[in-house]
Image (cartoon, rainbow, N blue to C red; front, side, top):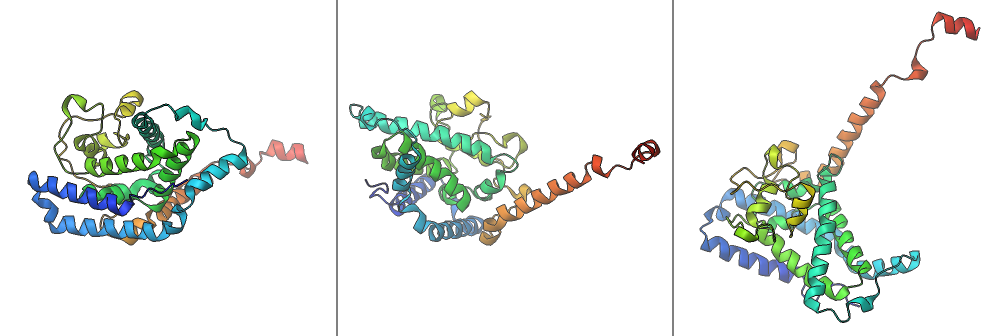
Length: 289
């Protein structure tokens, strides 16, 4: 069973980049050639390359590992025959929706105080474009892809994995582009660049909003939808203390931020009054004597 599609991530990346720059050219986005854009894109490429080096050994057998783990632990899975008479298009759409919901849940966790350091790398980009999809910390990559493989393994639809991977990757590159597309009456059906740009906006009212990657209905249902119109706000997460152009700073941010949070919690714990440390009253001393 092949869990890694013949259409490699390199091919997907090249297809997405070519398409994105055609669109940028058509819609006059000249800032894509600016120095600021180049510096941010270089940092993104460095983060992506670092992840590739670290994950090369991990990706190869993750699918078969998930299947073996289910069998070893005795975890029941859906009968593979369930999908035998279901059109492949329906199987893939169901798999895409299932993965997007699971991603929504993990994405929401990563926008909490302790989950944020894992996700901050993705929001560190102050020039969000198609390549920003790949500016993710290795810890986030592991969380999202383990979720993706494990879920579709449980659903017993390996035939959907290459298609889901392709569709979500290309769509992910598309929604990160700086394009004024909001999909009109279909904006609640499929995520648009305008919808996702608000997710990256460095303004308090947009924090933790628009967490769905493909289907905004999840944000509507769970109260995290925010789309007041075209987004012209600044991008990034500089207010969180993570830099936008320093790959080393981006890679080490989770460890440094968790260390800071742990220090704060330790200080709070030490400042709490302790009954064991309380000074006994004269009456208590007399009673003990």
